[in-house]
Image (tube, rainbow, N blue to C red; front, side, top):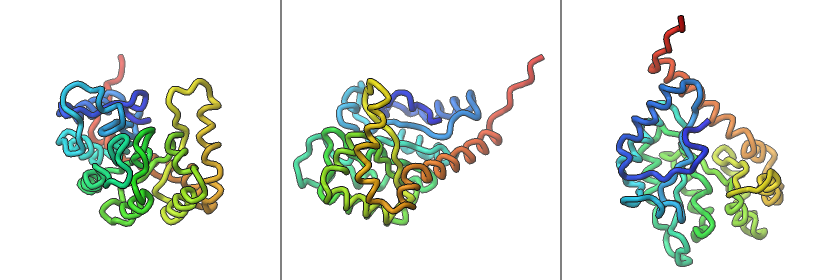
Amino acid sequence: MSIGTDVDRVLSPTDCHAADHIRRVLETFPGVYTGIGAFNVHEEFVSATIAGSVASLLDPALDSILAFAGSVGLLVILHNDVDVPSAKRGSPPTVLEQMHALVARHPFTQIIWAHVGVGRVVWPVTHHAAKLETLLRDPTLSNLSFDISWDEVAKYIADGNAGMAVTASLVNRHPDRFLIASDVVAPENARQYYRVIDIYRPFLDRLTPAARSQLLRGNYERLFGAARQRVRAWEAAHVRSAPDEP
């Protein structure tokens, strides 16, 4: 389980005590959590709904959260758009370099970048797969993985043979760095969850058997399994056991 998975949450620059709150949650509910997220920094229309200053990848509060997560072993699921909504086609992505620097600053924190940075009105940037390839080949970012679960992301990846071929080739080259599951906004029934995989079926057919297995299950088991072990070890060392009841 991840802290805060039930409700997407925008990270505010005023959250200077966020790491302390996460620690309190772990101390209060030992044995429960393995990750934190999903939480948002720059994300389409969500970021604009928070009062006060706009959240930023440069905010010290975010660094404090990621540093604490790394020290504990918590897996981090981070929502952050690669560009501004409805960006001009062909323009350079606005926050890609900041995201690169953020992940590199926290080499001991396992980070899953939700939706490969795109959304309903945040389109894939020019040569998006090639930019992801650059991140994947960077040895300072070996702690970074990508989630492609959302049906909005599926529309981009599964839209035409060319896009599917490029993305499938990327996943086949880096089969240990991608995860997928169901992700639908306000679904009315279970079938809408399954539709995500239905959209992805032609894409999944382009993957090697090993890459498909890792994408669908193996990477989840490895990342969350390792996080669970690390967090339980941290709790054993830092959380005082409750006294026995009389």
